[in-house]
Length: 101
Image 1 (spheres, rainbow, N blue to C red):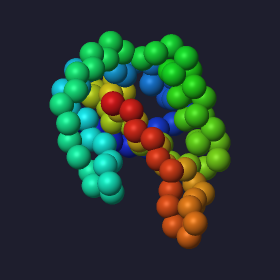
Image 2 (image 1 turned 60 degrees about the vertical axis):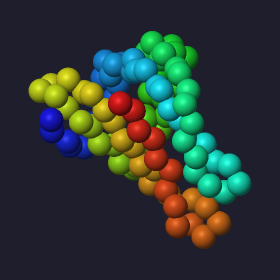
Image 3 (image 1 turned 135 degrees about the vertical axis):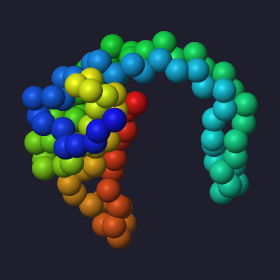
C-alpha cells in the first residue's frame, strides 16, 4: 500500500472504494464519557446521493487548497483522507477532516 497526495483528476476514483462492511459495535457519548455498545449494521456500499455529495465535497476541499491523501493498492484507490485548509472552532485551532475507506 502506498500513500500520496491525491490529484484533482483522481477524485472520481473514490467511486471504486468498496464501502461494504459489517459493524458490530459503535461508540457514543453518554454524560461526557465515550461508551461502546453492541450494534449491528450491514452496510452494503455507497448510498448514491452520499457518493455524489462526497465527491463534490472533495472537489471543494481540493479547490480551497485543502489536502487530499490517497491510499493505493497498486493503482486502485482504497481510501481517502481530506483536510480542510482553514482553521475552525472558537479558538480557530481545529481543522475539519473526512475519511473514506
